[in-house]
Length: 262
Image (cartoon, rainbow, N blue to C red):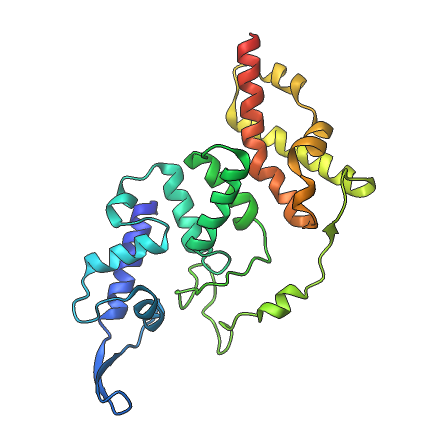
């Protein structure tokens, strides 16, 4: 299914959930309120967080809020987005339980600020895949507005309860606390960098691949490019994931350098 068709389907589901709307008198508030029997989305949470007008909710409204959940300001922005931006938006939507749109915006803005340039859609997509989509263990502090994930068996009772933040913080994970990397960590990081490099160079298809390989130095990349002292302590698995997130741009720089040399 094409990405836009996927989001059109989500909008129809959201609109269908709203059509289960039923009015009732709430004695506590002394006025009529609405209740729902949704199958796909947490309507109550959406109404509260997005200040939705419950009296006039149309399919166009549903499209607008689906666009927001996918990281766009409005539905027309989604329709005009690049293929990479659309793929990223679907990953954002499907990984809502791992990272919210706001959390992602904060994260990627911080990375752009640290690197000193704005990332293009393809680079952002690569970062999201490496840091969030392909890495387990992330848990968003936001709300997963879906009642069931597309690829999962429907949740049983209490399955939707998120682990307490304290419990997540107390999970025992290996940390990197000093640089340069030494011993087994250094061997693992260099091995991973070389594997990711080969994957990236095959995908980018530079004009002078042999020259790019000659310029590539996995040890130098790990020691000088990947980690900085101000990032410590850092989760070891998370640090490994950064190789895939940032190596694309490094290989592009090497390719540009070889083009200039040529």
